[in-house]
Length: 165
Image 1 (cartoon, one colour):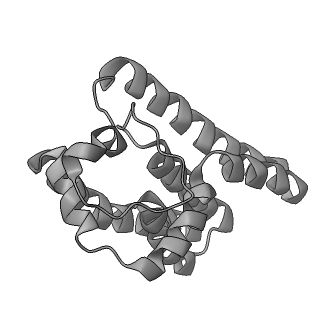
Image 2 (cartoon, rainbow, N blue to C red; image 1 turned 60 degrees about the vertical axis):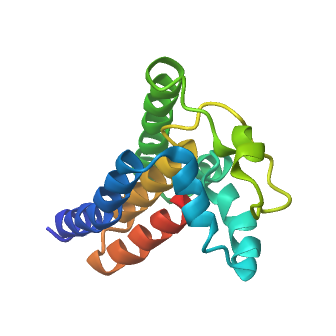
């Protein structure tokens, strides 16, 4: 019962992030959205995001899966399946459905003066859906299920939201 409540809290919390974000993404032109977000740039946050972006790049969820193997096979499989299936779905969508969605870095000149986080390699293609966001939510959902305590739902939702951003 506790695990069901944990997952329900996580999904409700995720909806609090996801639904407004989806509305903004679909109702705003891509470059205008990127410029609007960048208008709220905070230099101090660059250090956090330079590090945080790597927490959801595929390596961390993979290593976390392997570490969970020491806990038990079920946790290992939960993390591996969650992150693996989400990665496959994301790549299929990127390659075959949204293959024309380029990343903002491709439009650097059109965006004009903008703050870019130094030390981060920027790709030009296959912007949507975000592999980092997908990995972050899959990893944090799997952790919510593995931990199985409702009080961890919201911190994991916040972590997934920050890693997505």
